[in-house]
Figure 1 (cartoon, protein in one colour):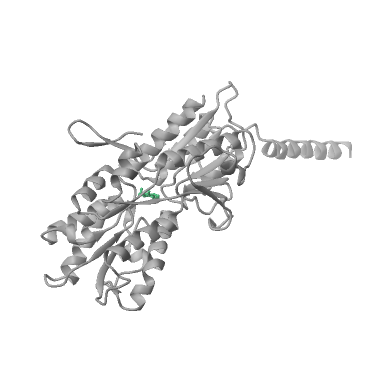
Figure 2: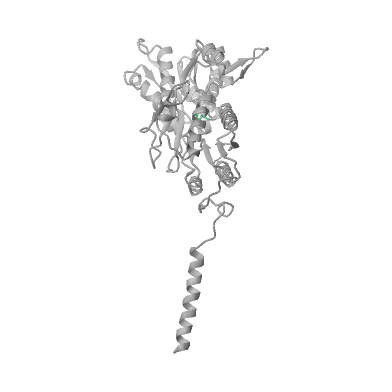
Length: 394
Ligand code: BGC
């Protein structure tokens, strides 16, 4: 009997040890957790007095993200923070790996402009497990409750400004004629692109309804007019096909509503190859990229929406400093600060599918040939060198 009891006890002890071993895991490290599916529960914050800011940008190809990276880095460094800055070549996996690396290297705060707004939930769970606050920069991160704040421009208004330009230039309020327009929208996986599109479409809808505007391709929805990766080449190809198919020599296209400057470059190239001069077609854009500023001066692009990226980074850095202290600010971030520009606090419109993300939104500005000197050159954002070439100055 004794033997049976002690055998049972031994078996029970072995079983307890076995299960306890699997429950009480040693403190995980980020290295062990590299696969995103198994987020680690560990605090990787640097404990050597450094405060590390991890910045993840989409790609270097577009002028704007280079500027964003440079502004953010300079301002965080000026305040004594260590900055890790990663670009992602517009690839989701590269971005995810970069973010994981930065967490591993001890990031205390993450500032992320997503390649694909809906592809970061897993890696953000790792950030959460490591207690790293996250700011969605410029593009809203979707499907994740880990995003703490969103800093951007009023994206809907960008589209409104583009449409208002078209209304003005085509004289849509007063003309009796029907004008023709085509849409070149942005990247469908970029949440901003839908806002830009919707702002423009809502503003132009009354003119479509009363017959003053028409799109001969019949392509007016967001997805059918979208441009993967905001690619200049894809925008050019799509518009070229539309021109060849729907706009014979005697049928004139009046406007191309391009969501940003990279797509506008493509549109202008398509127009130049089909029209004797692209100057007669109203082309919109966004970002005030240098190549597009030249086009505006030459008249091949009508407008761009200027977004003061330096201001976007100023708000992000101020917000980041609060988060690093464990404070989650509201209106006071912008009301009590000494920002000398307009910024609004929004707690209703940016629903990412998991939560409504509190957002700080800056004001976009229309730039045309008429105000380009004042808005871009006198403000000091751009300068001309002695050869007359334009360069970004601040
Ligand atoms: C930004 C635009 C930019 C586009 C392409 C958007 O998310 O808001 O400024 O032109 O991405 O990179």
